[in-house]
Image (cartoon, rainbow, N blue to C red; front, top):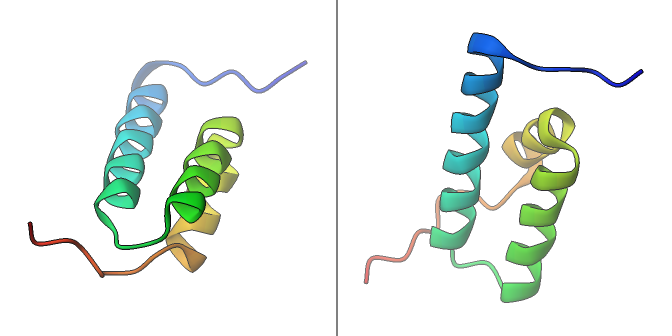
Length: 64
């Protein structure tokens, strides 16, 4: 009995996950940190996004 996400909520979750992963790889965090955040978001989508939003790498984006 897992939680099924479909329809508009599923689409919003997918877009949020893609945006978060893209933001992670644009950050200046170490490679290990990027991999850990990405795995967390993929394995635990809703909880991972919440944790990433609260504690993930902030702002430091590469300009090049």
